[in-house]
Amino acid sequence: MLVSFLSIDEIKIPLLVGFAVLKATLVVLYYMHLRYDSRWYALVLIVGVFFALMIGLLLPQMQRAILPLP
Image 1 (cartoon, rainbow, N blue to C red):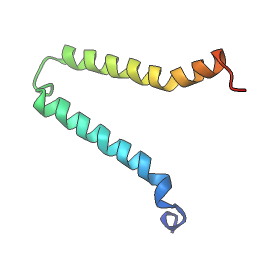
Image 2 (image 1 turned 60 degrees about the horizontal axis):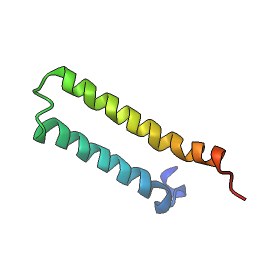
Image 3 (image 1 turned 90 degrees about the vertical axis):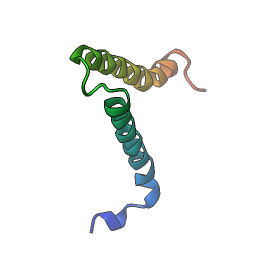
Image 4 (image 1 turned 90 degrees about the horizontal axis):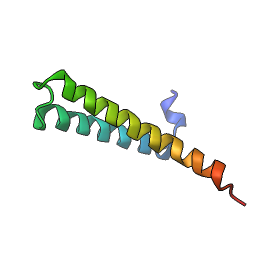
């Protein structure tokens, strides 16, 4: 089996991130009533999350380009 070759440390962080994304999605949809609101609010949320992800993914690479490690 392929799963037997994976150690628990290799899948722990992606699994926890997946649970966090699922929980955040449920909170946004139901507690913030975004599921029943206008689609414009969903668009604003998706654009904001997209830019936050891009900054989170690209900022470490930009810092390495500006200040190279010794």
